[in-house]
Length: 448
DNA sequence: TTTTGAGTTGTTCGA
DNA sequence: GTCGAACAACTCAAA
Image 1 (tube, helix red, strand yellow):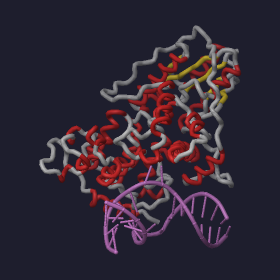
Image 2 (image 1 turned 90 degrees about the vertical axis):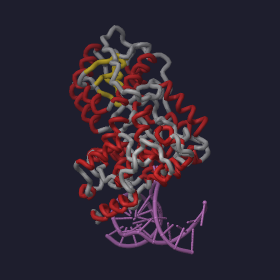
Image 3 (image 1 turned 60 degrees about the vertical axis):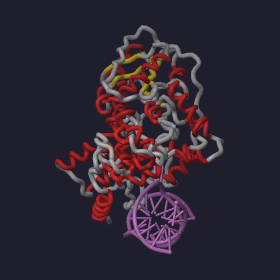
Image 4 (image 1 turned 30 degrees about the vertical axis):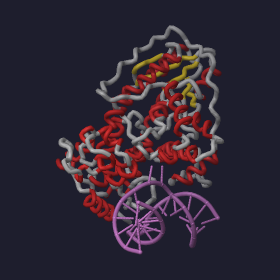
C-alpha cells in the first residue's frame, strides 16, 4: 500500500524523518503539496514566490513527481489518500496556531487513515524543554541551557531511492505574485546546503565578531531556507558539534533563539497577536493622519535617519534585513515614532522572505518591551550611534540609499551635518533625543 | 516559602 | 578616546 507524504514546511529530501517513515511504511509514496489559499494571502508576495520556487526545486529533485493540489487541506488530503488507498499520511509536525488547527481538521477528515507526525521544523520540538516543575521557560538563557542539556538527534540519511505513485493528476505551480525588482535568494535544498557550507567554511570563524556588521557578508542568511525547511537546523547543529571557537557557540545560540520563540508561541498562541506582558495594552501609541504619514515614511525608507532608511529599503530590495538593522528599524518605529509593534510586525510579515510568525512577533515584542526580555525598558536605540557602531564604513547605507552616495565614510550617518548636503534626501522627520524622552515617559506611565 | 542572583543585542554622563 | 556607573527597579529561575 502506498503512503502519502504531505510536505509543508519541510521542502527537502535530506535529513527528513517523516520522509523516512513514509518510505518505511509503504512500497511507494505520493509526495504531495497542497496550495492552501488561506496561507497564500497573508504570506506576502516575496515569501509566496520563494516558496513556489522551492517547490519547483523539490519537484526537480523528485524527478518531476511532486503532486500539487489546490484547495482546503481538509478536502484535498483525504481525497488524495482515498484516490491511492493510502495506508497513512505522513507529516512533519507544525506547531503554529493555524497549522495546529488545520492538522486537527485534516486528521478528523481522514477518518480511519492515520495522520502520522514525525519530527518538526525544530531540533527540539516545542513543549519538550521545560523547567523541572514542568512549566515552560520564559527567559532565554535558562531555556538555552536546558535545550543544550536536552540534546537533539543526528540527521537521518537521505533516502537513496524514492518510488512514487505514477499517473496522478497534478496542478501546475503558478508563476506567483509580481514582486517588482525584489531579488530573492536561490531557492531549494541544494541552494540551502550550499549556503550553509559556504558560511560554515568561510564566515563561522569570525561570526562572533562580525555578526552585527550589515556592511559585510557576516550572517548565514539561512533564515529563508529554515522557514521553508529546505534545510533542517539539525544539519548545521550536527556540523557545529565538537567545533571549538566562539563563532560556533554564538551561531548555535542564534538557532536556539528560533527554538525558544517557537516554544513561547506554542505555549501562548495568543502572543502572536497580543502583548506577552498585558500592561503594555495601556501604552499610549500615536494615531491619526500625522502618525499615518510617519508610518509611510518608515515603510518607504524616508525617515531622514540613514541607517533606518537603508534597512527599510533593503527590505524592499531583497525581502530580507540584517538582524541588527531589524532591531534598529523596529526600535525606531516603536520608540521614535510611537507606533504599535503590531503594525511593524505586520509590515515585516508582508515583505520578508523569511517571515516566521514566532520569531517575527516575539522579536518585535522584545524591542517593544512587551516580550520575554526582562531588561530595563529604558533601552532605546539611538539610530545615529547604531549606524556609527555597526556600519562604521557607511557602506551599508550607501548601498541602499543612493541619494547619500556622495558622502564618504561614516559621515553618511549624519547627512544634516555635511556641508552641501545631497538633494533629494529628507531631513530627519523627528528629533531622536526628544522622542527618546517622550518614549521613556510613556513607558513610565504603564509601570507597576 | 523565601531569598538570591541574573537577565541577547543600549545610552549617556562624567572621570 | 575609553571606561565604569547610572539609568530604576521588574520578573524569572533556582537554590
